[in-house]
Length: 237
Image (cartoon, rainbow, N blue to C red):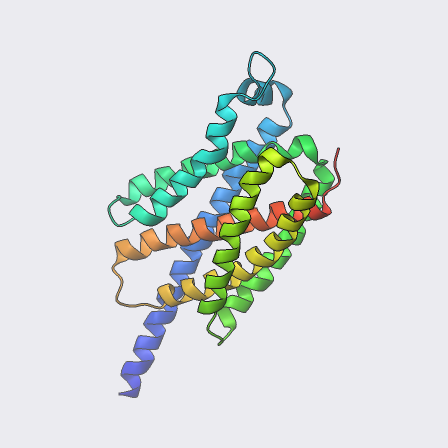
């Protein structure tokens, strides 16, 4: 009896280790793709202008496509993963990372590189701390996570409105809320992923797909935490 429990526990631990290795591989891969594209386009006036500036000198329609397409792709991945093959999911994941990188290139026009780099490391430290907390805590974060998602929806709507209002005050409030929301959601998501990782009933294909989605979720949370901190801590050009 005890031997059976030990074997089950060992199997669960091995599955969890493999699952999170895949999750972080996807997450860091996405960060690498986005970072390279963001830096390449954001620091090259020719590339940036050809992509985002129209012949008349205004914002190109391509900018709006790049800005909002990741939302649709992210929803497609998370809601349709059961019907999509692993190859299609991976292609969509790479496309998402690339589009996010192009979108993030705009930060190099607003903030200096030293400020971007230092804020990135602050975000990485905060993210790592909350990820560890979410993985190790025994407290059920379900209700906390649901509340944070409600706040996030409100922030998202307010952010869309503020694109047109261009209110610095509203932008500051959204950034402050963002730091709280995205650090909290990091802990919540890690707890949820831990539950998936230790589930021995999942097939290998299901685990592979869910690890990709986990990597996507953590990537999104990290990017949003980084951008929230950058709005608060970044030094403008």
